[in-house]
Amino acid sequence: MRARIYTPPTSVPIVGIDDWAWKKGMTYGTLVVDLQSRRPIELLEDRSAQTAEA
Image 1: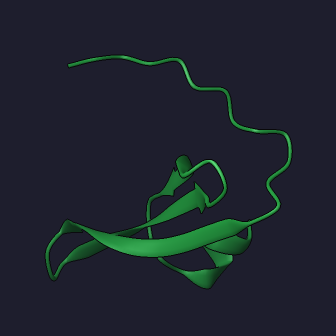
Image 2: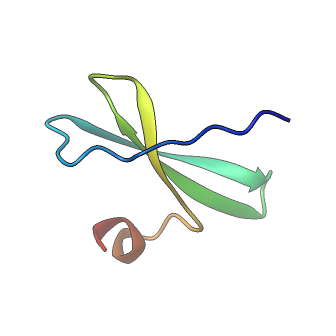
């Protein structure tokens, strides 16, 4: 496995949010992406609105 050092951006003008399955039909997570650079910013452990807002 390759390891990378990633520094999150200080500001992101365009953010994308999508959910995805950790385990299909059972557990879901949320992916937050910088749409300009097309890089992930954060992986959240669930897909609730409260978690994404925080």
